[in-house]
Length: 317
Ligand code: AMP
Image (cartoon, rainbow, N blue to C red; front, side, top):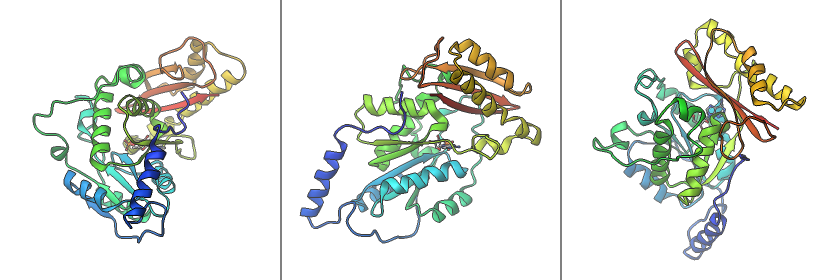
């Protein structure tokens, strides 16, 4: 699966029709004239987000996050600003989505530094933050779910049952609430990108997806909101995940195609104190485990350092 930014067919044509119509009506269309830069708006209700969408006729780009923003999120926001262009708007959603956490996972301890998040968004020139409460997003008797049933079945989907059902449901809700033209996701969550791309295709959602590369610490550890939970010892061991993936990739380039062998090479590099959740070579397109690695496949892993679960992946090209 080439997850380098996918397009929803027909969207460009629809967008330029809309631009022509706005011109006929004498309204500014995306791309015409500079947008006056206002202050960061904080939207906490569905109604406020809808009002914001109605107030802007230009291209709107959504960056969905769970907050505790770091350089990885900042890169997505910068990418979103490029996609939006001068006249467009960027909305960052900050919502720790309870339905994507399992009963024994870290929902209650997930960091929520909202004041710092707002500061970063302001610095980056974000137009609005959508920061709803769980009650605003989920009625007490909420009972409608979106379930992707192929790409989401392995890897994180296998070890976190219900996770992608929660992700798809909340992302679809965010799409219908914020009504973006585009949305930006990070390839650090590779399977999530693949699942959302499938959902967008299958449900004909009029949102164009952009996928941005993983931002790392200088020692190779993927930036994550969960890194703050690592003890100094665990933090020192965590870059072994990246070392392992690079070793497997080097072996693949040198001619090793057996997935079992590649996994063995990677496993040997992972710190002994880590508890491996999964380590797989996933086939491009389906993300199902493969026995013989092909160019374009992904090696993906999840591992616990203490109670902290980290994920990472690498493309075998
Ligand atoms: P999260 O807040 O962890 O749910 O992540 C929100 C978005 O940021 C998702 O699309 C993630 O894939 C993306 N993201 C998180 N960490 C990184 C990173 N280190 N590099 C690039 N994107 C990231």
